[in-house]
Amino acid sequence: MTHLPTDVRAALRFFAFFLGNGTLDVDLLDGIDYRSDLLTHGSDLEMILAIFANVLEVNDQGETLNAGDAQYRAAQWIRRRCDPEYQVEPPFEDWETELRAPRSLTFGLPTGPTSLAIDSGSVSGDTRCD
Picture 1 (cartoon, rainbow, N blue to C red):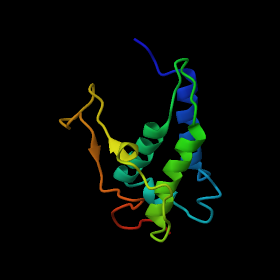
Picture 2 (picture 1 turned 30 degrees about the vertical axis):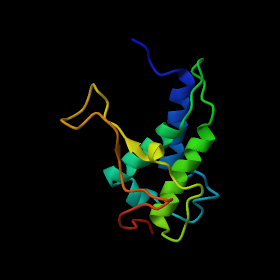
Picture 3 (picture 1 turned 135 degrees about the horizontal axis):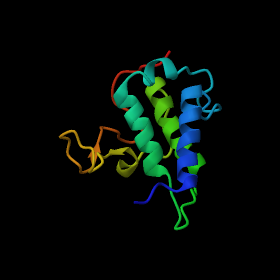
Picture 4 (picture 1 turned 90 degrees about the vertical axis):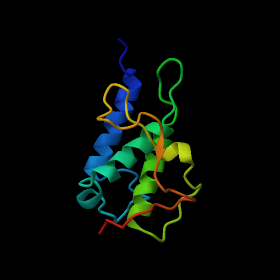
């Protein structure tokens, strides 16, 4: 059995810390308190983590190559969810917002990719931030 490489685990840990601490990309999310609303709705948190994981690149040695970029793309989704006027640049691609269930833990869900309606940088659903 192989575990996630140390660098990937560290990137996930720091992402979770910044997200939960309210310090994820402070320039982009300045003045937006996303934690009280977004982090209490499971589907929003699911998408935030999915974007981070989908964008994160890892080399053959298990080192992360773009943790900052992955954090920024997740922060862009949060900003768009909280601020409908914000335009995500570049717009999200389908692979960035793809949701997958692990084969070992499916809860009766399909294991193939599923994408939410995210088109040209838009985020569907109600705005949930103060």
